[in-house]
Length: 377
DNA sequence: TAACCGTGGAA
DNA sequence: TTTCCAAGGTT
View 1 (cartoon, rainbow, N blue to C red):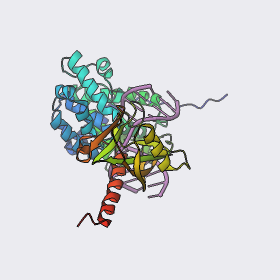
View 2: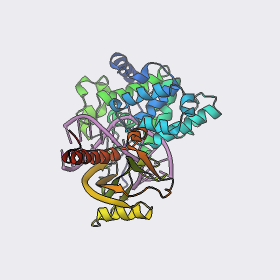
View 3: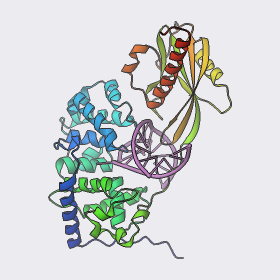
View 4: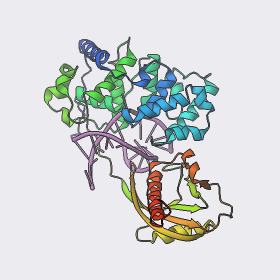
């Protein structure tokens, strides 16, 4: 029976590789962006930038990176910092386990590597949050070691160069490209070559409308020669986020607000937010929340349905009903997962975006109500 | 392998 | 409005 055969990749010849390296590095030397983490080769700085850049745009990362390096200038500063301060510095960046893993790894580096980011693949790969791409990026950029660093950019660029039609969401495809990439990295400038490859993907060989006419390696590109650059890379479509009805409460008592800490695992793990729970379809959201609070010993004098906010995560779409309530008394002892916090102390907490949206709605409505009642002006 | 884990920008 | 996605890692 005829099995579907993978298109074999011809190993590129020495002359082709030399030409590719010269064109790519020459272009990179001319147009590379002046990014904050490119000012020196401090492994810690490269590391922090690479973690922040995971699934995150350069323009988004820059202000976070600058603030983070100001607050935690060395790996030891990060290792010795309060976790709350680290999370606060990450507020709004998303994928918060990156921040916790980064600090845990910083502690590991201080305790077991003398405060020096390890320079061998096996050791650095054992650190939390450092996978195959990030290990390669740090080792090649900071230590100039000849190792592949294959990210989404590199997979896109290389799948076009070689007309590789394998699904790039598969691990096996990434490994294949790492092998191929290794053969292309020059002896003298591994870090620059890896960065040049990513820079090309970010600025020229873009997912949509690649600027092939101004590409420094257009002669070396097989997809462009065939006019099929738009069909690559092949990538399996992600499922759209599933809608999840939620209830969130803005519960106050004597100028304080009730906060709840999320479970240690799962979405927004360990983050503080407003008390919230999933709502099964047609249930009455107000009753659902008041029942939940009653079971904690928190009884409401009044409650109002304020409205809806929506927040989309990578795989879930929270449809949030926001409820405002006034608690009768806060005398009962709360579990560690709950806390009453003065309104002017909320800013000390690192809230995920969805809770900011809910709080904004609650405060809008509250201000309007206060204005109507003549407490303003 | 495939699902999970945030957010915001662009088309 | 919807879709895709941006320097991925963990389970």
